[in-house]
Length: 122
Image: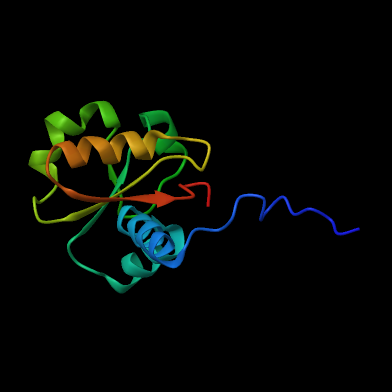
């Protein structure tokens, strides 16, 4: 007797839907390794923002990142982040939505923004 698949119980999306979905995810997200590669290469026009609180920042952060807690983004970002920059937000890790909240605040201000999946933990 064949074993029922949990994976295919809901069929995979058709090709056009899959293309739209995965292209959209890449427009909104980046990963730790791509951010590290860009920082190491000295890519310009990229601002990496740590949205965690002061205590977390003091425990460790990405070298070169800007410390800008989410609650301060609306007031401080325009004076700190060039309007044509691509902003990459991060927080602790996959269980933290602080980077999502920070990305939303930057988007409200009209910035191009991506969320770094995995967070500082990775």
